[in-house]
Amino acid sequence: MITVKLLDTVSQIEDKVNQAIAEKANEILIQNKTNILQKCRSLISGWVSSQPEMQSLQSSVPGSLAGQFGLYPGQSISTVGTIIRAVENSITIDLKKFNRKLSGGLEVNFQPSSFINLLSLPQGFVNYENGSLHWLQWLLLKGDTVIVVNYQYNPSSGIGRSGLGNMVSGGFFRVPPQFSGTDKDNFITRALIGPSQEEAIVKIFKDVLGA
Image 1 (cartoon, helix red, strand yellow):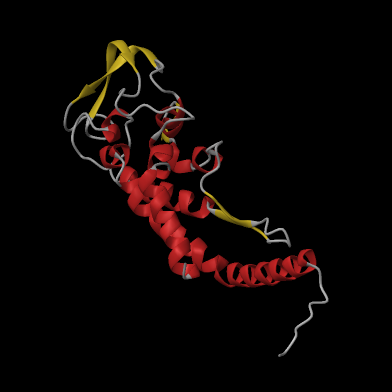
Image 2 (tube, one colour):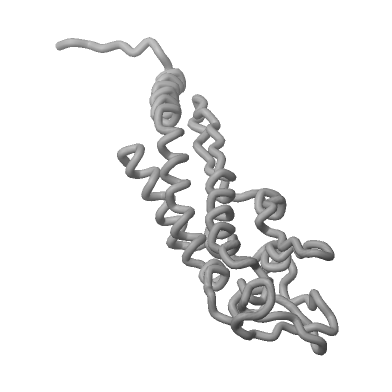
C-alpha cells in the first residue's frame, strides 16, 4: 500500500489551487481582451442604426426628424454614421486581474453617461447665418421640453434648409414625443440596454473564452 502524506494544510492547498486558477484566468483574459473589445464594437452599428430616431434622421420625407431639425441634404446620413462610430469608440474594457480569492474579472463599459462624446460632435449642430442649433442635444436630453416658442414646424417638400419643411410663426416647437429623450432614456440608452443586448454580450464572452 502506498501512503501519500500531505504536507500542506487544507487551507494551503486551497490557496494554491485558487492561485493556479487565477493565473490561468488572467492569461486567457489578457490574450482575448482585444478580441472581446472588437466583437463588442461590432454590435453597435446594428443596435444604434435600428433605432427609430436614426431611421427618421435618414428619411427624406417631410415630418421626419431630418426635416424638423432642418438638417441640410446629405447631412443626416453622414451624421448617423458619425454617431455610430462615436459610440463604438467609446467602449472600453477594464481588466481586474483575479487574485487568490478569485476576485476579479473583465468589465466592458459602453458609452459615457454624460454623452460628451456625442454632444461634442460638430455634426450634432446645424449652422446657419444667424447662429447654430444643437439639435443632437435636443434629441438626447431635452425630453418633451418646449425648445422654441412662437414658431412651429411646417412639413412641406422643397422648402427650408432640409427641403422638407420650415418654421412658421405661431405655436411652439419641441422634439416629437415619440422620439424625445432624457439623460436616462434616449435612443442611445435604448440601443445599448436590454435583455437581448445582455445576451449578445454574454455570448461574446462564451465564444471567445470557450465557456
